[in-house]
Each structure stands twice: as C-alpha cells, then as structure tokens.
Length: 322
Image (tube, rainbow, N blue to C red; front, side, top):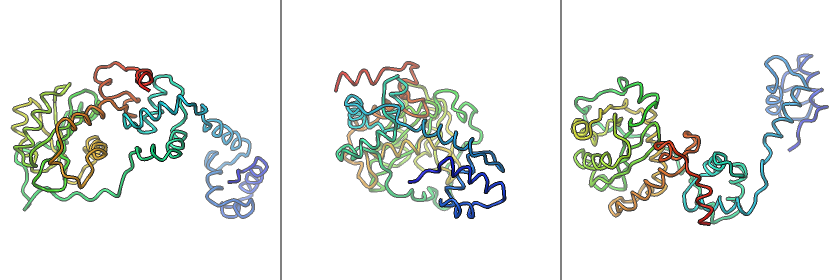
C-alpha cells in the first residue's frame, strides 16, 4: 500500500488552506477519501501542517517496528506457554515484558503461531455470537428477600479489596444434569469452579459451600443473577458469612468479570457438551490453570500472585522445562 509522501503532504496542506473538502483532496492527490481523513486528523482540528503530520507519521512508524527479531529461544517460550499454559499472545508478550525478558510483539507472536498450523489450533477463538439470555423467572415470580446490586458496598463496586465475588452457573446439554458453578473475585480474578448435581438451588448451595471452604480469600459479598439456582442466597449468607446481592435483570454487564471468565472456562468445557462425565480433578486442573495465567488487568500478574503480592519469574521457571 502506497504511503503519503512529504511532497504530497505539502499539497494536502495547500488544498486544505484554500478550502477543498476531503473528497476533492482525495481526487487531487490520488488516495482514498478515508486515507485523507485520517491524514488530516494527524493535526489539531481545523488546521493541517505538512511538517507536523510527517513528523507524527515517522514517529508512529518507529514505534510500530518490532522491538526484537524472533529467535529460537523466543519460539520455545511461545510454544511452552501457548501449549502447556494456554496463554494468549497478548499474555505471552505482556508477561515477558513484566519479567524483562526479550520477546517479539503481540502481532509478531500471532504471525509465528499462524505459520505453524499445530500451534494455531491452540489459540482461543470465539465462536458465534452471544445469544440473548432467557428470563430465569416464571410467571413473573422473583427470588424473595433479594438485595439489589445498587446497595452493594463501594469496595465491591470499585474493586478496592479482595473478597467480593461474582457467581454464575455454566450448563451443559440438558437442563437436568450436572452444571459447573463459578465464582470469581472482582479484584484479583481469582477463580473457583465447582460441580453441582443439578441447577437446583440446593445442589448449587452445596457446591458454593465447598468452593468457599477452599477459597484462598474469605467471601465478603457475592453478586449473582436472578436465576432460581440462587434462591439459596439466605442459606449461603448464613453458611459462608457473606452478603448476597443480585444484578438487574438482563444486565450481564454488571457481572462482566464472571461472564468473561465463563468464556475462558468454555475453552475446556465447550457449549453443547454434557457435564455429567466431568470429574472434579479435571475441574480443579482448569481452575489452577486459570489462576496461574497472567491477566492484562493485573499488569500481567497471575491471580495467585496478585493475592499473595509476590510475582514469580514464570519465564525463567518454564525455560528449565523446555
């Protein structure tokens, strides 16, 4: 694709000054109107200076260059974290930067992965569009004694402390079968996964009590949707010592951390697959994987590291295993 030269930028500057619009300038200079539009935006609104625009272009080009050339050592690190740890290219690059380990850019990592077909199969790819969630209430009935999310403590809203949890269930193929129960700490993204024998509130409560008992952080509040499976909220409060709040109907964005985590869990337990044959060991293994995966929101620390306040050198540790 041809780039706009400094001479052409002087021409654009002259045309802007005499009042030509973007379409007319595009015809004169020989570029698409959208290209001219982006070019003019390099400078402040209502003013275009060719020298300023060209300087910004050169600076951007310099910043976009690969910081490193790909080496066999980098390829080994990429393979290790992609295959064994299910890291995304962004997580690989971010974690290497955090540890001061040379690594090619995210785009460079993608290019390497796509050049090796067996590696490309390990990328997490979103399939299809999210379906609109059906109402969980029948005949307009509601869970009694619900506390709305709008009175939840500020510490839960702004993620300023540990222990504020979002809850959900992940279903399989049948309504009356095992389901996964998920709990995610809003601050640390620390994740717990349990198995309930059904979507009934009694079975979900048993799973939640088990999850809370093995949690590294005490549960202060939990936030759930309006599904009948969470009608056990009073019993959960009494058993665990937390306070339960409910999101607004059809407002999944109010539990965005949990919704995103469920998407990660679906990588291991795909939609449409029965949950009846899933063993707890498999669930705990996925839980451990997610809690030891660096997160962009945590400056590429893992949830476990974030809870303990201590970062390990994952790159160094894993290089010894390559």
